Length: 133
Image 1: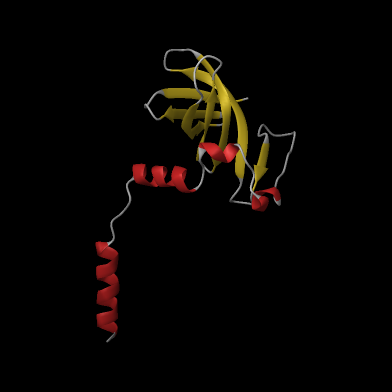
Image 2 (image 1 turned 30 degrees about the vertical axis):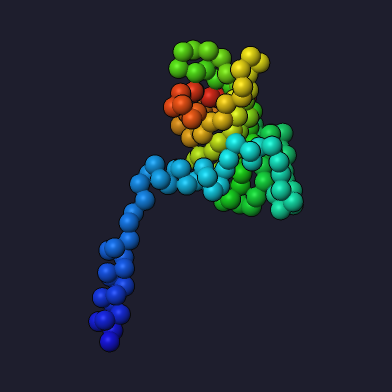
């Protein structure tokens, strides 16, 4: 009987499909942080809302190991044009908006690449290098 249970567990584990890194990142953006997150703070997030002027984030919400941070960012696109915007980040990944005077705002997905630096991409796969402002 124990052998049968172990066999069922083993076959279940072997048959599970492992998510690719891209699937993990895409599901993170869809489930955890979206560009719209920076616009509103839910009543639950309001309970843990914190501002600390010693740090670069505008504010954070959440609990230890599950904080979501909001940052103003500035940087350049792949052509060297200046950009600026606002993002929310939880862990290594985030999402936000690049703001423009002459064209529509652009939603981006971000990833930390080093302290204070992020790589961002928009829906058209354009890349941006951003610094926390």
